[in-house]
Image 1 (cartoon, rainbow, N blue to C red):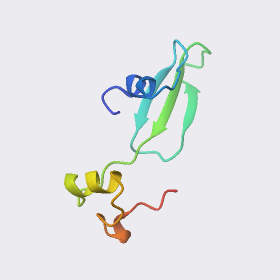
Image 2 (image 1 turned 90 degrees about the vertical axis):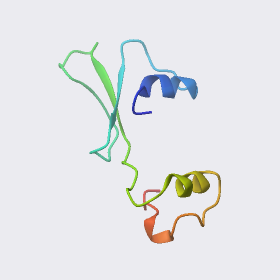
Image 3 (image 1 turned 135 degrees about the vertical axis):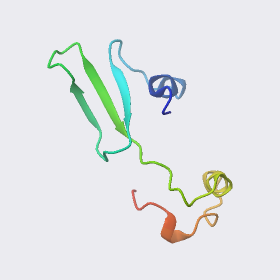
Image 4 (image 1 turned 90 degrees about the horizontal axis):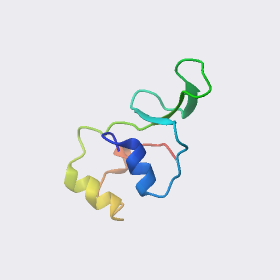
Length: 81
């Protein structure tokens, strides 16, 4: 996702109009669509993506995303949803 956000979204079936740039923003928690130059043909989708917590191992993360909700202690799960 970080290396090729547009390609990742398109692989997942999300259609992105021609000329739209996609950026991942790890510092902001809000989606935004805007223009970097004020021109309507210079559109950027900024998608927030929080960085992975440093104290969660790859094994714990893989187990959690595979459905094992007990792999990560409850106090380490982001309260985002």
